[in-house]
Structures are given as structure tokens and as C-alpha cells.
Length: 365
Image 1 (cartoon, helix red, strand yellow):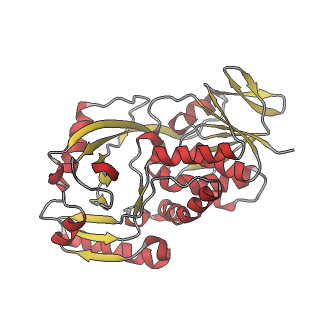
Image 2 (cartoon, one colour; image 1 turned 180 degrees about the vertical axis):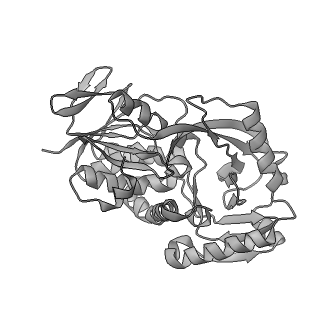
Image 3 (cartoon, rainbow, N blue to C red; image 1 turned 30 degrees about the horizontal axis):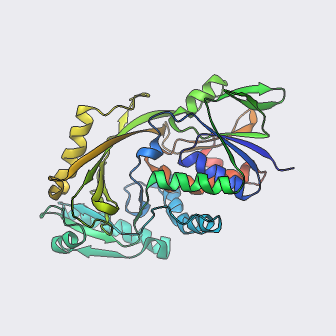
């Protein structure tokens, strides 16, 4: 009999775990209540960990997530899913400080030597060359191009993973969820009653801590609000524009159809408050126009707000709960969920199904 696994949460964490479990023959049920503020639905979608300023174990995990993407795309194709809106358009590191940019270039070159072909090549560009690739850039910035940098639409990828899981037999329930003890097992209470399972995966993003606290198993994850604004440049073909990384907290990501996403705020301590604020909107636009003044005449389409699940110690919280052998957690990905999520979902699925997964030891709750 196939193991019965309940996955609470249908963002990138939950969708990735569900797909990985379904691929391995588990009977998966995905529960999600559709609360506003899901981080995946608002994410920028940059898949270029090698240009990040992150270091240490977080960077190692980040880079591994980026390297996993070709495998993920093959797995989805095998399940009949070919649309993820993933594209390797390159990533431009831009800055006005030549020394800072040089240091970034050296760091990225060293990382690319280790990462191999998935990261592409590193090229130093003049301002004119950079503006040929991204015409809206300021005329006084210099740039370094990483050709392997990519981008993906978070909503499309999430839906692709959920659809693929569904084709492999996964079921979905729209409902609130509570963890309850049912004899020796942990079950999930949904609106229609009790859902029995051999194991439960809590992948509810910023809400994971609330869910587990009610089950007397707290984890160090809290919401961090991120506001990201989507613009449209009428008549512009932005499909091949690279992502922009200014060596700061903000970024710019171009998609097809003249759509350009700019962001994002990092509002630690925001609580569960998925509002667009005046201060957040101002910051996002000032940051973007400071690097790319050519976006000034773009139409403002919408501002999306995501509540990132931010872990206290900086690393994701992934693994089985101490004292709860049948409860697993996949949360705390912060702003790196779309890059790390698929890889961690695959590793966690192996653990849930009984394999040894030493990779998760540093991430244990």
C-alpha cells in the first residue's frame, strides 16, 4: 500500500514536496486555505544564486538549488508539463562603484568555476553594452553579465508542480488545517473532518510556525513582508532582457509582454499584514528608477505582497520535528524559495519515505 502523506501548504515548498512524493508513488493530499500573502505568488523569480552576496552554508544551499533546475525541468517534462516560464536570459550585476563591481566579478568568477555550465559565463560589459541588453538602465552604471542567470514566474512554476503532482495521483483540498493527535499518529483536521496520514509535511510558508505552535511544536519562522511592483513598458520586447542585481536588497526582473517586476521591500516584523503601503511603494519605485530611469514612463500594473517565511537563524527549517517522528517541516526559505524549494522538496520527500538524508542535518528544526 502506498504511504499516505498530507502536505499542508501549496506554495513553492509544499508544491515541490508534493510533486517529489507523488513521483515516488506516495498517495499525496495537499491542503491549502488560499490565504492572501503567499510568498510564492508575489515572488520575483530570479534563478541566479551565483550573483548573490550570500555566503557560507546559505550560499551553498542556494547554489545547489540553482544547479538542480535542469533536473526539475526534466522531471516536469516527464510528467507532461512543459510550461514553467523559466528562461535563462542572463543576469546583470550593476553598480556605480567600479571597485565594488570588480570584487563582485571576482566572486562570481570563482563560483562559476565550481558551478560549471549551469551558471554560464562571466563577461564584463561597458555601459553601452549593458544598455543594449537592458535599455532602461542608467547611463552611469557599469555591469557584469552572468549568461546562465535565469528567471521563472513563481505562480506558473507552482501551478506546474501542483498539476504534475495531480497527474501522478495527488489530491487537493481547499481548507484550513490543524494538526491533531490521533492515537500514535498525527492527523490533519480539515473542514470536512479528520484526514488520516502516515506522515504530515508542514510547508505552510510564514504560517508554518502558527500551525506547529498549536501542536506544541514551535519552529523559529516568522513572516517578513515583501512588496514588489509590476510595470509594463508599452511596445517594448522585454522577453530577452536579463535580470538586474544592483548588489543591494532590490532587483529588476523582466518578463514577456513588456512586463517588468521591481522590488522588493524586506519588512521584518511585519506580522501577517499583506497590505501595500505608501512607504513600501515609494521605496520600491525609488530603488528601481535609481538604477533604471528608463522605466519612469512605464505603466504601474499592480503591487503584489508576499509574506516570506523568514527563519531566525538564516537557514531554512527543513526536517522532522523532534518528538514528532511523523511530522516534517519545510519552511523558512526567506527570499530564496523559488531557487531552493524544488531541491529541498526532493530531498525532504526522500526523507519522508524512509531514505537517509544527511543533507538535512544542518537544517533540522
